[in-house]
Length: 318
Image (cartoon, rainbow, N blue to C red; front, side):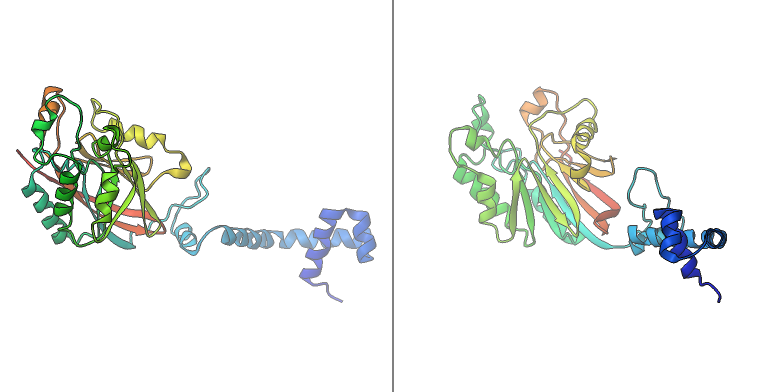
């Protein structure tokens, strides 16, 4: 009687795992029969290994990744995933602003209004604000003479008046100027969370940093209290380097230094938000440039990643 392929595979693989003596006893065959099965197994082994390999590949990769492999996607050593060349997905548009310093005489209402006008034209889905929403109140000599709105209540009301013009979702972190009210001894004076509480569709994401997750992609907002660097890109490069592999965002949008720029770093789309305010006398005296303006960012998200990224910078000139 002819022996089936399944029988050959079963016996030989049992032999490979348990040895010859046990195989001969369990299957009641002779050494000559086992040797014959081994020769047959060798002949079919190529096809068998191919099928087994394909099954293992199918278990480890998604359908999209298998399609990428079939189109030439490479299995890169050290990476658990296959780069997928697919530039389709969900398109999301962000409106980006930072360092408003509402309440300061360096905040320009017409600039702010034009930003919201452009956001509307661009079809912005979410507005993100990377801190220093208000100017705050420091103990610096002469600072009070740089204020159009003085004190916590006045700056809060003014910021709410300006920000309430946007009728869609807004996401905020606070910055060092916002926290001056805490440092000045006003316990619990968290002005940006208080502003968000009075806006119809605003969310406070955190102090100095916070994450916004859109269709699985992580957009990190960052403020910080460090200073400018000689090379404009250096600061965001160092921030990007500081993330461990497991906590890297897809997009980093940073404020605080009043600089604008875009750099891809460590597969992170890094954006310096610029400033929604003019250069202050202090910045001029300390020879710090001020990049006034705002961004719209259109990006395509698929499988929790960024398929393409299209930032547009709108500068103000003064």
